[in-house]
Amino acid sequence: MDPSPSSASLGTSPPDPRSLEHQVHALRLTLQVTLVSLVILSGALGIYLFRQVSLLRRQVETNARVAHQMATHFNLNVATQAMVFERQLVEFAKTNEAFRQRLTRFYPSNAAPQPHASAPPSPTP
Picture 1: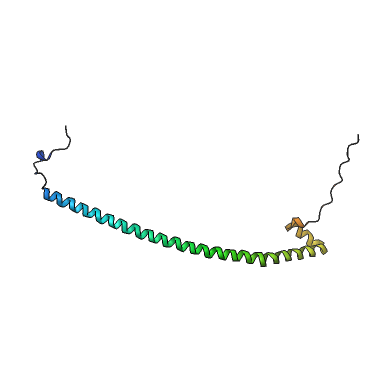
Picture 2: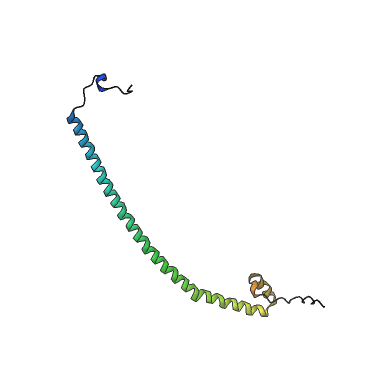
């Protein structure tokens, strides 16, 4: 019990071998054109991605150099000036009690050492 009707039962003649050959040739040509187009497209995409990678590498090198220059500038100029300014603030805080209280709020490490409570007496034997 074949569910598909045979060509004899439909009343049609079998396909012409020439037309089948022509259809196979057209199908091969379509496949070849598709494959050549795919190769060209993948080559173009590869070239595009290669150029993008090389451009990004140049940008990374430039940005790394600029970041290094900025870090060097900060360490040489800004950080040393900030440390000098902080030392000046600490020196001024030694002479001005009101400023010392405000400075210890922002720089607790610069606070004057608190006197230690007396040590508990040692146990006597």
